[in-house]
Image (cartoon, rainbow, N blue to C red; front, side, top):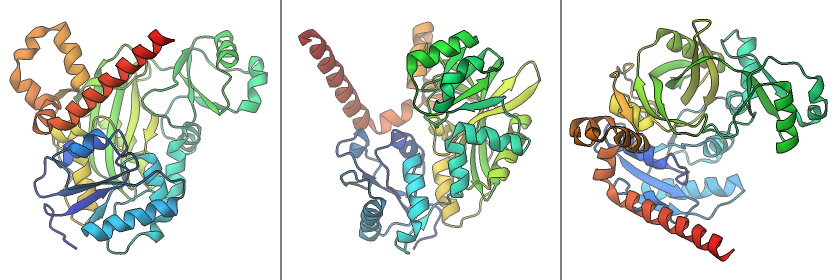
Amino acid sequence: MRRDEHQFSVLIPDGESKYLMLVLNCLSLIKGIKVHIMSNEKYIAMRYSNGISSFSYYPITTDDSVWISNINKELDKYKIDVLMPIFNKGIMALNLNKNLLSNECTLVALSPLASLNTTLNKWSLAKHMKHHLIAGPNSIGLKPSEFKQIDQFNFQFPCLIKPAVNTGGGEGIQKINSKEELIQYIKTNNPVNTLLLQEYINGFDLGCNVLCSQGQILAYTIQKGNLYTNIPYSPQIGLQFIKEDKALELAKKVMKSLNWSGVANIDMIYDRERDLVQILEINPRFWLTIDASAIAGVNFPYLYCLNALGVNFKVPAYSELKYLNLKGLVKSVRKDPRLLFNFKFIWNNTPFKFAIKDPIPMIYHFIWRTKNILLRKIGKLRG
């Protein structure tokens, strides 16, 4: 097996994940890496990427042992050096079944199962942070059995209500201003799973992205969101990388408490009233702005592979640049059309360069999306 830091092969076994394109964008910056994709969806945009060496389709299965068996086929066929899952389900399945993997391959570092389960449940994470004296909003979990007594419930309003299970992307989060609104929310939505009530904090969003080994941070970036869609609590579409010691120290503390290994995206908020950074939640996987971090100087997927291969590296520095994803670029151009002529910014501070270098997946995605929109419109007209 190769140990050269620029010449190795990596298999991504959960290529159906929406984060695949972002991971490939990062790996495309390093010449010599052979990327192999395995997916349970036959036709995905990144199948046609010029940045991959092979694409393999296996039908979806609920049996993890069958999935691992298919992975082993790919490992043997392509003599893979590094196995790197990129989303929650794949990370958890490999953690539970790594004893079934071929011995020839190096699996990236994964966190203890207990720590993964803690981060995947917001209520569990809130209790963990309280136990370890880690700054976070006042929170409480509401089980479905407690919904009928909701009128007897006391909590400080306004607050945020969100699913306890880590859905990501701000899905299901809503601001609640009073007990009456909370009662109405329960009646209207009739939730069947545990909900988290979280203190509403007046502040601004921060994010600390990390790669860790046994609780120690090997690489990180810190970002501040500065542009969003009109959908409340949706992910940022524009950001700036910053240096923020309070956020970094908080990240170090929570990662050490979890004995974390691998990547994670820590959602934080700066509390203006208390002059305090607090942790909102942790995504135990890759995230939507990993290619932004790579542009700023920290290529998390690449470093994750190096760590698996036993290659040592210093904590990389990053530039405090501004970044817009493609949605952010479009929104910014609508506000100020002159940005279209700032070619240097567009090339260096957006993912535009990745689309130009690898255009077929974007064209495929555009055609697929347009077709689906048309079919929905036709369906409404017929209905």
